[in-house]
Length: 184
Picture (tube, rainbow, N blue to C red):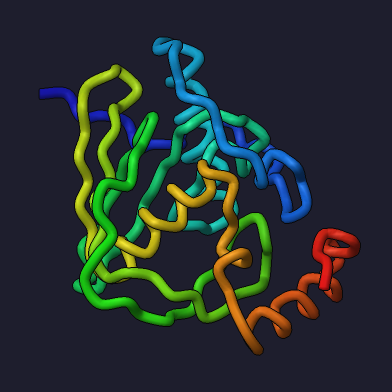
């Protein structure tokens, strides 16, 4: 059986959308066209995620308002999970809720304690339209929830509360890319 190429090796690194860009704050559209253009998008998303040393990337983070995300993320047992989901739905987010550090390629250099469940299940299809169901625990569950949030127009900073939220807003205002992207 021929080996599949490593994701992202033939992709183009695209420009990252940063906090404040309207595409990050709008719900993404369902993907209806499957074919070479979608395959190219997925490949470019992997290349961009790897270039920025991320563990997940949603299409709107590169300015594309479609429901697609890619991931290359370990769980808490250091099992590596690599793949993509088109038209994902978060069907389960349960178990214990943990406050853990969370960052985002669209808020470079920052992180804040964010509450997430330690188990998540996402259903959707792959770029060929075949059904996929991904189950994750620990850090990988956090990644799945984070990427599904992106496609709904939510960034992790929207989930941070209290003193952590005030500190994060201050850090965003001080970031070279963050001037004017946050109120409060």
